[in-house]
Image (cartoon, rainbow, N blue to C red; front, side):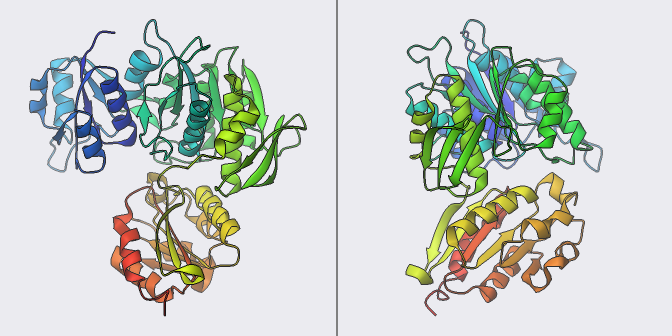
Length: 477
């Protein structure tokens, strides 16, 4: 391998930060820039020896890297005064310097580098990509297969979001597990990221409408998923949620690999039996393994089943995969307990979860409901994703929050009326335009023994620590 110097634009994003870590581990010199370079990503990257620059100034051309790697945060946008939002990108184009996208660089230099191509296991789907990628990585690690991975979060079993991995005994190729996102690649490549990965094992976990900022409808996303299907070789395996009509339509467009259907649809070859925290894995009706773990929710049960089937494709016995999952510790910000106020049955528990799509919110609340029984759940959330900001799914919010006793919505940045959208919930729904007001509403409503579930795909203004501080005294009242 010839070491090179790459300069990454948008380096503090989850994907690009992981790519930077992989490139550094592979021996390349890595520098990068972003707006708002701040911890924890900035600390993680600097600890790896990656020089970070604040902003996108054109004078960064003086670094003279071998390649500029462009994150999809970068665009040709102009500010109100007509100046470019990303002057460095304009300078790269004017000078005719070499540039590429993050997914393309990853494919060319890590996943399918000349002479050292990896067996890629790609996890695609509207929901559960990060968790399932972490599960599969842990199953392969537990089996001694030394997988590389790139995960859009930090799996607690590993403590890092990305690593190269290595060739394990009896493997013809190193294994690499990657979270396969359907969002577009870069301003100059509007294909989904995952078409660059060329997996041999591809999980299609689920498929719903999302990313209303770039996709006009569900059919457009289905077409992108079929582009992924087209890249899987005949010896590969498609692990497909058999319960979803959207994925059936994707397969109906054509497929050339083995299809391993999973779920509780009658025609699924792989099924599950039992509660989410303790269930059996069945293949053609025969029990192959049993998962007993601390995770809840049917969505995690389905994620686990997908991970088990993907691992089976690279030689991990189902029983061994199930055993590995018993020690899976989940991913940060996936039903992560941020703290307790009080003790015993009177304690108020505050959770942090990444859920933002209505279906993800619903399954997250359902998972907590299964854990806490009749105890009250206070759902605190912000519609922060581009899709939710556009209001494309606002009508689904009351459905997504059905199992919550109370709901508190942070409305900053919305162009639609959250109170109106939540009106079917009646007095159970509350809205606030700023974090402090939101915290005050939760404090006024909270009781000893409550479970406060915070859901956002961003930092949520530090609401978790503010809630823990504000709720002191209530649990012991």
